[in-house]
Image 1: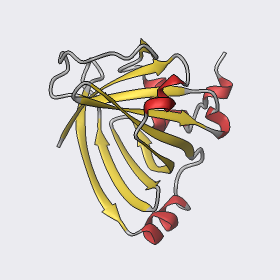
Image 2: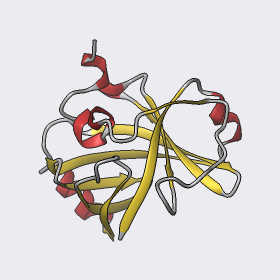
Image 3: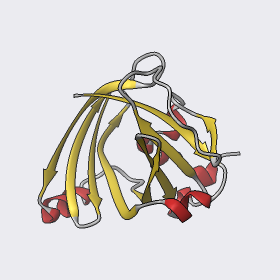
Image 4: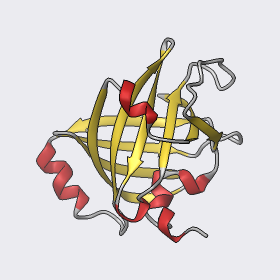
Length: 156
């Protein structure tokens, strides 16, 4: 139940040419306290409830529990969410034996492209595609829970 992931900015949209899947995501937070977030998500036509704990000092590792819920339940829970829902398309891109999840944000976070990769260890080596930009692992302003509170469009 530990998630080990690193997060990067994305330089351009060239990843779209070789992505093997994409789905729309709408999500909101029932609790966005950094030490424990509770997220409700509609991913395509599926609903999910996710609880995440605080990240470690490097920002790579944290507790994560996720359960699929009925789509109608997810829709109702989204209505209870804190202000600032997230709207994005998630693209999946294979690089070596790993899969990057690239999020293209819309609404108040329009223009933001972020890639995440799940790893077996924080220092695990992996193939880095040429569209991969600066690493932002551990930078809380890129957490989805914080993008709902302080959207990308409001950054200087």
